[in-house]
Amino acid sequence: MNYILFDGPSREHLLPFTFTRPVADIRAGAMTLREKWESYLGKKTSSLTQDYLSEKFSLVKESVNTLIDGSVVPNENFVEQIKSLEPGEALVQDGKKLAVCVKEDDIYHWATIKFQELPVRKPVMAINQVWDIYAMNHQLIEQDFQKITKGRKTQPLSKTNFVLGDEALIFLEEGAKVEFAFLNTTDGPIYVGRDAEIMEGSKIRGPFALCEHATVKMDAKIYTGTTIGPHCKVGGEISNSVIFGYSNKAHDGFLGNSVIGEWCNLGADTNISNLKNTYDIVKLWSYPEQRFVNTGQQFCGLMMGDHSKTGINTMFNTGTVVGVSSNIFGEGYPRNFIPSFSWGGKQGISKFNLKKAFQVAKAVMDRRHIEFDTVEENILTHIYDSTFQTDQNA
Image 1 (cartoon, rainbow, N blue to C red):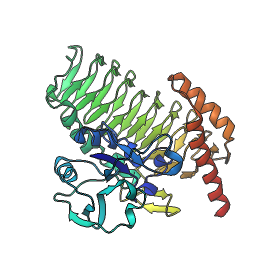
Image 2 (cartoon, rainbow, N blue to C red):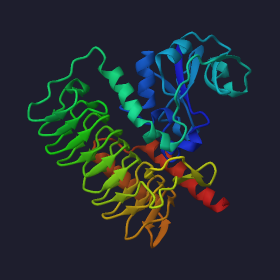
Image 3 (cartoon, rainbow, N blue to C red):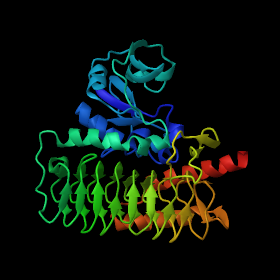
């Protein structure tokens, strides 16, 4: 069977992260949603996504295909049901089609087809809102840890480290380095990916996932429910946050209950408020509703899209959303919603020149030996054009 992960109705609510990727490529836990699905299915997947993303995230079709909502977190029961689907059948939860089986000619208009609807036997989790990414991360790290480490043996942990809790809940992949760190597994496991490093003096409380080639710098303080994606460098204080990959928060400063995309950089002493002084529930900007909406979360920090940056000593208020490829700097708190391709801060925001944005993205990606090609350029161009078209229509 051919499996395709599609962008369901959650896609708009997961902006700014889905500006630059399908829903399935959001990282939540130790893996992206796609990586989870491929682990459970034992097969590669492709994407049915926005047209402007389809060149980078291509669609593979066969005569019969199973389409799966990319926001769904897989489990054994649901995967078993998916594997038994026949053409014309759909798995439904709360009136929402989570998986459908279709023939090749029906892929693009599957939403208009009448299916035989089968109920999901056991409820499944899904990432439906941006705050779900960090709010569910504690549980998802634990699930991924069990999946990744089952039947495998960890690399040995150096005796220079201090462990509180069960050392069996620490797993080091090949090439991982951890020396003179304080590791606490009483609340959950600690996963250290291939060729990743936790430097001396760092204090880590699980559940925690450090993905391949990522680095925790000296004396960092990292609390439960945190994921540091591939090729990231982090320091300072981090709590219950997810950094997707190739991003840096390399210096002191607090990041809590936040989600940071790829190719971001938080300058030294960038600090994020994650709790209002009034202890009220936090409101957050919603792209589809074009207003601030109630998150139901008392703790909510910063949602930052890909390629965005901050200068030193930048401060963000509770519940701030920053779009793609913005550069935020200066004293004081900028506003709680900063559109894509913004340049400035509290003193004022101007439009970030698109060609300059390309130059910055190319320079950053070159440092990791990844090409900023015409595919990436076209994606950013589409986001830029749609951002300012929206402004003109407002």
